[in-house]
Every structure is written in C-alpha cells, then in structure tokens.
Length: 204
Image 1 (cartoon, rainbow, N blue to C red):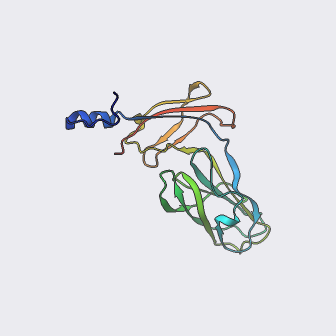
Image 2: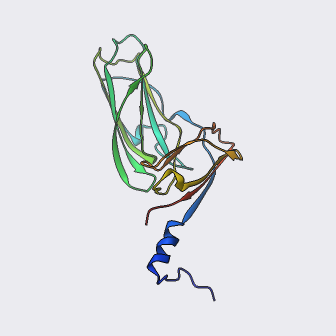
Image 3: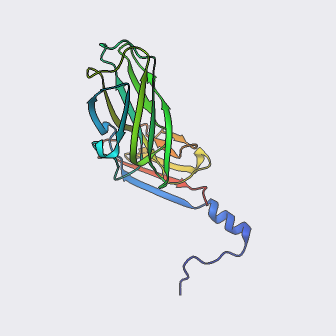
C-alpha cells in the first residue's frame, strides 16, 4: 500500500529533497493591458485615491501581475516635477502588502509611469500624488494596467531556480527577478500562446 508523505528520517536527505522540489507553471499567458484595472480617467486633483470598488477590475484570474500606473499631463497644465504612488493589495502569496512607487517621466508631454515591483492577485487601493507645476485638471488623465511581468507563485533563491522558461514552444530569454519572484517575458503574450516555466522553490 502506498504511503502519503512518508517521514524522511535522514535530515541531510530531507534537505536535498526539499531543495529539489519543483513546480511546473503552464498557462495561456494573458496579454499586457494598459487599462485592465482602470480605463482612462480624467484627473480631478493633485492626489487621486482609488478603492477597489471604483476600479474597472480589481483582481486577476489566471496569474498574478505587476501593476503599472500611467499618468498623463495633457500639456495644458505646467510640467509636473514628480508623481509618486502607493499600491495596496494581496500579493501572489496571499499576503496583504503595500508598496510606494516613484514615477518616471518619459517625454516632453509629461507622461509619468509608475511600475510596481510586486506581483498582485488583487488590488485593494491605488493612490498617487502629483507635485510641482500647476494643479492637475480634467485635461489630464491616468490608467492602471499591467505589462509582461507575472508572479511565479513560488519563492526562488537564484535566477537558476527557473530551470526552464519557454514561450510559444521555444526558449524565452525573459528576465527573472529573484527579489520579487517574478518573470518578465521577452516574447509578446497575446492570450493565445502558452508560457511554460519549471521552477525550483527555495521556500520551506
């Protein structure tokens, strides 16, 4: 008769088994969406606070994602000097977390991008504050979505713990974040191509 979860009495052997525990992740990778969590919305003030109930969607179904906030100055307002934000949500491991994000400006027209580092399954709230220039008004806008970075769902101790990373049946030269347990695809997810990752977990 087979025994479930037999006890390993040799501590060294037990540690080896733990270190080699692997998870296969095989899924249709969702396409990046700039406005998944919130479609384009006019600004009304320097500080915007958005609760989950006011979002277009506040959760993801298939795989945890890394949120991206894009705040656009239409050019009517005088150029801002900074945009900072805070994301609160449930991360890929089921924990409630919060992180502060500094915006990066990308062009003369003042498009600020705030990219989180953690992967979230659910967003509880998003807030951001604009500083400098003139007050934000209805000519300015923001969206909240996600890019090509997804949560692995397991803790890794080194980039080599992602033993296999394929996309659309070929090796994918993506980016592995050990600190955040995420993977960024080099290929372009489109809801139709499969990603396959074989990950060795270091968390016990």
